Image (cartoon, rainbow, N blue to C red; front, side, top):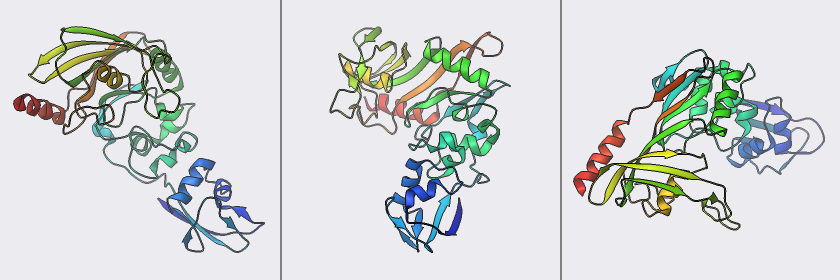
Length: 303
């Protein structure tokens, strides 16, 4: 992260507005974030975004440094060719920052905690050009979900993969450990998902969007089970919401009532799809990580 210092000259202006006009390509929301987090100061003091700076004010602010290295991305790569990357995202790593400025200025992803996006930008800065949007992202996983993610390396592949997810042509398989044991070996959950007015949390809601999840019980313990899960639609938090809806929340899922576990036990295992360049059927997989295996073993032993 680099520090920029400037002496302001001109008519009084809001701090956040000034920051958007520095040539660093900050969005207004990102400029507000800099001020709110104390990363922009006026005459040595942190100020609110609406603070008016005047002629002669000394403004200092942090700006992401495109040369700042973030280690570890290559260790996540599971497969790569000229069109796409497949990575194994660890649990606890957010896919991208909450502030959207990184989509306009990818180097902004380097400001704040490491994310998958910041690691991509650090390791593969060329993905910020060539008509590729969002550094090649075509889908996402929750912070606490581990597993396989696909990334496009060119604009054509990005369109093809994004179309595949949107048109439900991707065969996605997850592994999840849930509280309780479903009565049947196989099941389908067909329940709309949405955010009702006045509620922050997405949930099953009669006026929500269509959502369908299939599952197969792979292992049973006394008070928990390991499922192979196939989301047929791609709603936010779909698997977590659906399984909680039928009384079997994901272990470690604090938001939807899952019992305590060392981590949220949900993992994106594999994706089957048509290769964006060749059209050939392709299946990529991210093996279950060791922390998931240990947690599941401990749960079974505890039962």
